[in-house]
Image (tube, rainbow, N blue to C red; front, side, top):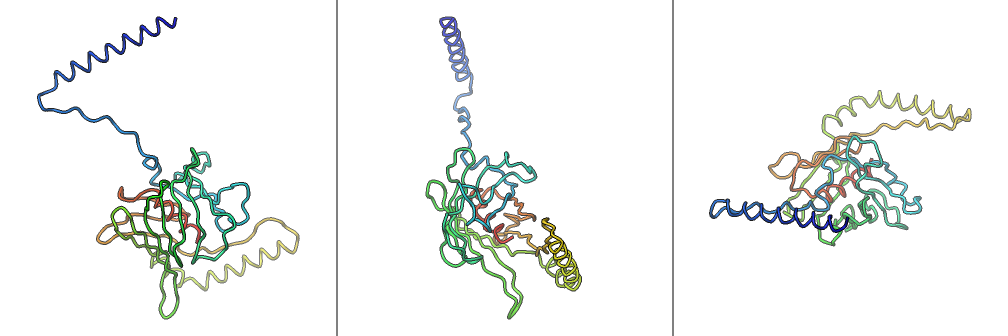
Length: 261
């Protein structure tokens, strides 16, 4: 049987050689054949529409046994099996709040190799490197303020590939205006929900009855003279809108941005 199989393989190989030779002879003079399709790179197959899910970023110091602080998966899947990367935070890193997140890595779920690593580089600034150590870009967070005038939190991303800088402010102006207008209503609702939670606590209920009023979070990153390049749609769901943005850099930005949520 093995001899027949070898003979079959040799015959098929011979046919392929003859057809390939004839194809080259029949091609017009000077015309070149298309180069073979290259296999996609490690990050080319990563989703452009994704979410940072299963978030335990705020309690990273309590994780044990290599448990990820978050996962990156295609948006709308709702399935951990569809995750493409895990976020691993450096163990033993001190908690310094929003101004200085600890170093972390975004690792592939397929072989555990790092897609990118993020290193603090000053107050609210981070350097992002690929798994091969090449620089992917720089991320900076400028905090918001109320005085002397209201200022939203601003995230800036500088692409190492082109040097282009992308900026995005957290929350649209009309969303923040709505919060200001409806503050009395929200305050009353918060008091009611807090009283409800305390009542459950007094009667011994163990359920989580807490209620949280989330602030506007939609963020649009734009470059000079360009449209939206990266978008945070809400609920830690993000979309990459330009092929010029490395997915790994966008994932690092999304993790830092989601850490504030």
